[in-house]
Amino acid sequence: MGIVINDIRTVLEQVHHLSGDIYLYGTGFCAKTVYYFLKERMDQGKVKGFVQTKRTEEQVLGLPVLTVWEFSKLVRENVSIIIAVQDKYQKEIKNILQVLGITDYCGLKWSELASDLYQMQETERGEIWEVFPWYRSLRDTESKCVFHYAMLAKMSCDIRYYLAMQRESSAVLKDAGGYKTLGDWIRTGRYQKEQENFLYVPNWTILNYFGSRFLEMGICLKGICTDNALLQETVWRGLPIVSLEAVKVFGPDVNILMGCGQRSLSYALLDKIQALGYKKDRVLMPCSSDNPFQYGIQYFDLPALRLGSEEIFVDVGCFDCGTVQKFIELTNGRYRHIYSFEPDKANYAHCRNISRNKQYQRFTLSDKGLWSEKTTLHFSDGGSALSKISETAAGVVEVTTLDSALQDEEVTLIKMDIEGAELEALKGCENIIRSQKPVLAISIYHKAADFVDIPAYILSLVPEYKLYYRHYSLYKYETILYAMV
Image (tube, rainbow, N blue to C red; front, side, top):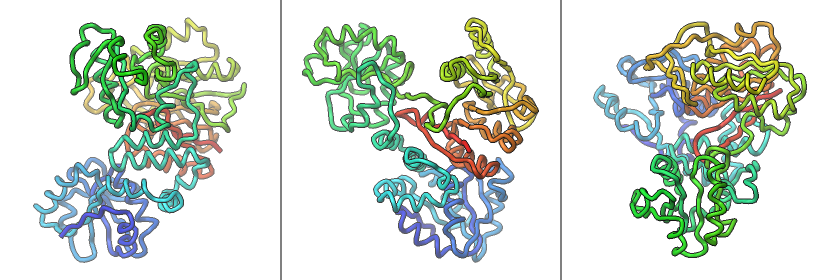
């Protein structure tokens, strides 16, 4: 009969006894994590391939992908299968295996394995993470902290590990003009202990978005406060919605979490809040200009990164020129060239207008997407930060490779944030990476498997790259992998 392992020490013990041919059911983050773990830890067995219910890939990590029906014909002595998918999918897969007469399998209870790892001593935990080749290339404590908690969050699908990451992080959050940021407050652990926390929101849309995120992260809320008369005296998820003035009845130690969505709106409310008698350190500001959950100088945040006057910067996923503007500020306008790529028509037009109005110098903007080959792909646009390549989208976009777009041009720094297309775009600049070894700042949070695939691919091109992880959010988004020689 099938077994399910739910503690990490049993996993460590059992791995050494595995023999014969091993197949992994799944091809995503969990399956690839198991692959690397088995590859390093097994004494006798060998991973021979991956299994999918319906095949969508021919190969993964250089190994064949079988359908479950094809695998059922292979079942014999010395052939084993490990169910390597997230907990919520395991029941369905067990049923499929049993229908096909496969009752000898092993499953993993990921949420409990993550809990075991969380409680381990740092040294013991580090020895387990050492099985991943890119972990050995991480160069500082902050990177290992981000790796650890991001792995636990992805294994367990529990985003509260990102809050634990903030408490142990050594990164410095942005100043909020003397007010405490939500990030500062998270690090104290007060969010778990205090019950007098009110979330300020201006409207119902922001309440549904930010309120849901706060509750998902396990942040205690006593209620909601607002200046919106239409919301006052109603209820959201069992929490009362009251005016700012009414919050005073709950006492002087109430915290007000600003969920405006824009720092300018937050500051506009501060005079009113202080006039009502609230202490400055009880008003918790957003962590960045437009999102309470986000902070930091994303894409340019490494202490070892020294931007000079000879930089040639490639911005893949220009969106609103925000990253370009930050680059120009950090270099004091002294750089050799900026190449930006933005395939969304509305975003492209917006970036073109910004570049003209701000009179960007030595700036080239392309409306093509970047990919691993020159082709045309389905594309979901709409003028937002979420535009992306999607097989189900009605629109199309022309894509090319960075190698062909820049040909013999020099490159010193590449940033990519393109909603899950990063790995394919990296494959399209293999020559540039191999020959020039530019600094890389790559988003690795859009797909869970990117956390495994992208660092492994980068090191396959340039093994001497030093890797750094940074996370710029109190939530599951905005994880960046930096690579530099």
